[in-house]
Length: 252
Ligand code: 13P
Image 1: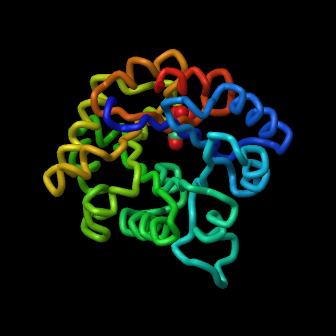
Image 2: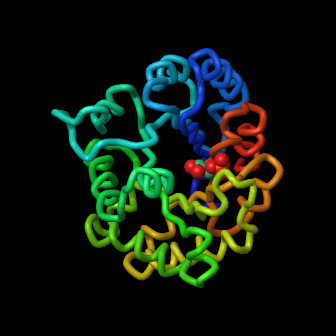
Image 3: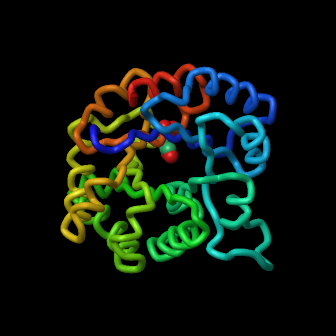
């Protein structure tokens, strides 16, 4: 870590009633101070964003969406746009999460459009990339991650990564309890940074690359100690305040 400000983002996925979320937010707020080194973000389901905005206003914790439409407004039933997220105080938005890619058919080109739509609205995209188990076992990890990155690079340029975050989430580690080893994660993080450095070293050095996939209080420290791991994108463990705060402290 070192030169880059660590970032810990909670992806709540499709979880939480209003009451559960309010209690979770109270717990998180207690453990994050303005002087914390790590930046802390929560990404609730759309319907809870108003509540989150109300609860977190004036706190050092930021919030974001889990997805956005490529359109600004119009006849797109069921969709939520970047300007709508912005209107509710979001500063981040997750783009191309593997669940969106695999369950909702979002391909690389569509994900790149969403990345552009986020930036056009002034939202910081958290671009998720990562290989499946089959891809890893057949030695395609680097090729897959490179392809996912290059589509965004070719469409929006290396300069766009000044206002973006990447999350490397090996699909086989998501929600499985099977975390990548620190060495496995570091290897891919370094690959990602080197690929971007070949276009612009300064941008690559300042870019934050988060690890995601079964990160929890007990394994965060050794993952975050790796040179190219700048934080975490946390699923299950972000739903418990104490667990999430343990990760935030490890990132400090
Ligand atoms: P888990 O932490 O539950 O494995 O989920 C990771 C993830 O998908 C975060 O976006």
